[in-house]
Length: 219
Image (cartoon, rainbow, N blue to C red):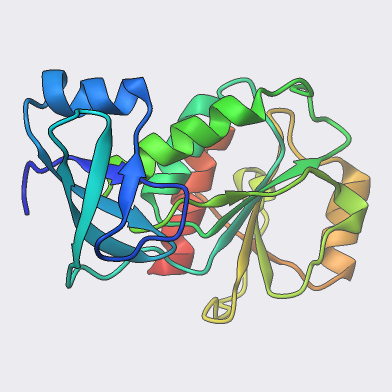
């Protein structure tokens, strides 16, 4: 259903439900997109929707055949200054969970997480997802679960060689802060069996590294 606007509804959806809309969404459908038809989604499913004559509510129609293209990957990342881009692009890449991690060199400590959720919702609507990634509570680096984890290893830019290791069981991709991981953090990653992956011989911005790393795991 190309060019039909997609709307995330933050509640369980069933055919026949009447859903109240906020003014922003009502305006978007009626005056920006100039349509009464839309697609509504949540929790992996998508339904048709129809803006009611009152302009303030939707009637949920039939469930569509569209399957959720999202994946089961968790992106663990140190909050950065360009958080908008990281959240937007990671959502488009289909990640299931966004896990902020407080590392030794994390510099962005005061993130508006409610705004980040709004960005994730908008990116989900745009990218044809049927779900919105969960933004988890920040955790301290040492408290991470390192099982089935791969991390972007910037040591590749300084000559480190990498074995050809299978990535098929990886569930979490970890990206370091703008200043990179500390020596202590590299020791923790290596000793806990996390798999370092090369992103090439150049040092990438954290938000770019996240997308390249996710692409390697999905490949």
